[in-house]
Image (tube, rainbow, N blue to C red; front, top):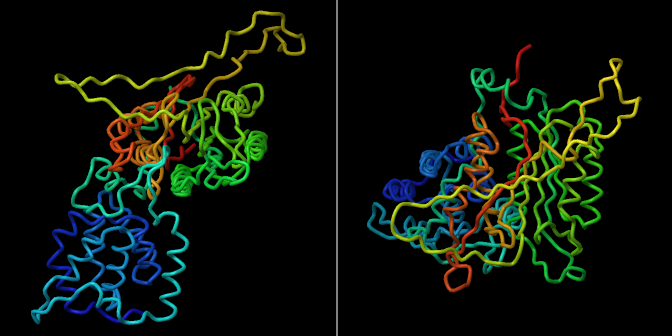
Length: 462
């Protein structure tokens, strides 16, 4: 059990700097998890903090809780600030003058030996998250903040990340919205809404794929997708680090699931390195995206005929780095995002086998080979996709945010337009490298034939 209250000098330090902390503190999952590992925050406290929709509100709630969490809370908080690259805030707190006129420096906070159990828990938490905490220079598919950059000098990129409501609960659809939009939309009544498959390749074989670097931050992406689609009432299965053949087998097994008959949709997320038209397996072999789409078409996956099939591809589509262009003076020029639609062909006019006729001799309705699909791509053809090694990929971040905030009343195609707009606004921060101020542009293709609303957290009453 925690001892009651924080030391008075520590309480005063937080109180004096509360305005600065509320403005500059970044309360993300890593900071919260580190404090949970020290038994400073309970799970319910962590959830209540991360449920707040803005960074300032999360900071304020954390600062209200800290003084009540015992004498070790201040030390844990400062340590978490260091681990999350907010050293300047740690210095601000530990160098604040206290009541007796002395100044406490950061080194004095850590002179006491941590209890054995607490030290062990902290070490374990650090090891579990070392792929998120460690910094490296950006690669063509990565974006990272300079480790020593003060949080007070935020770039556009960091500002977008700071308030990203990663853990904001998915907002629910209202009964009124459902009733007014369901007639012209795809049926989305089943519970679960469908099955979701997430394939995430993070580590690649150093022998068979020596040119493919580890996708640091990729583990953040697959967890983000798992969480958001679980909240959207999908049964999600995550498979990590598969060879090209392993990915193929996994997709084939997913397509053959008999449970697709009783649900209204499906989701497939492929997260890996890639080239135009294909993604890499961990063995350096390519899985063609055309094969993936074919596996779900009306011929090969009949249980999903006339049901929406959603695909999200987080992978490079080439090596070209989008360095951006300077906007000329005058009115803002905003073009619609590129949207391609696959031509699935025309209905055949040949003879129909008598066994395919109903009693009235009327032929069965025919479907195009491929339809009712929508696919979001992280980047344009020929260009690289950006990934932050701590917060995950730009595209997945923005998709997660848009789904959580807008799925309750927005058609999925319009959600992907919103994602395009947010991606267009972002730029990388990597001073001294070719990736500084780099850009990215996402796009989507669609062969949807109705409006696609996910109607989150609403179950019709019959």
